[in-house]
Length: 163
Image (cartoon, rainbow, N blue to C red; front, side, top):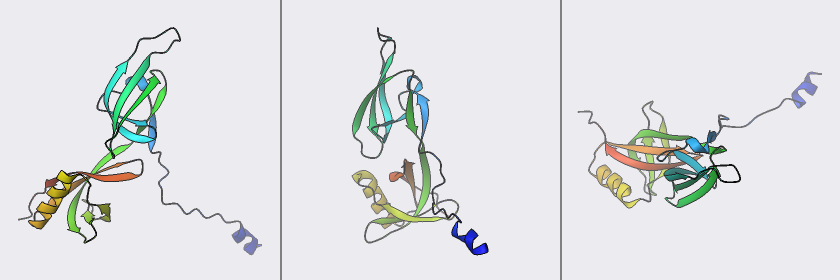
């Protein structure tokens, strides 16, 4: 009977926390500077205009937003009373340890955990600042933007010297 119990034992192999990538928010409450999902992409709202209630009963919100990872401009028209998906957007600072020959960054957070799965950014200004600062042996703090399973380097600044 013990062997029969082992046959029906379920195994779950998942490393996700189970948390949702987005949360619902009423379209009429989303403002300029906030975040919104358009075409399943995390975007930062650059302009919102709300129309008055028409003969069909709903005020409409017209969102113009920029994809936070690609920089593409997206637009959406949604009834103000309906819920819209809003992405969880997280910024985290890491100390730059090394840049590998193939362009991957070796980073460490405040807790001492290493991260080595991000490439140098495609943005030329940030890329140059990282390469120049690293070449000059400066301690650099890199800010990572995370949302909906994607990550990217969004800024770099000089860290405090340990001298």
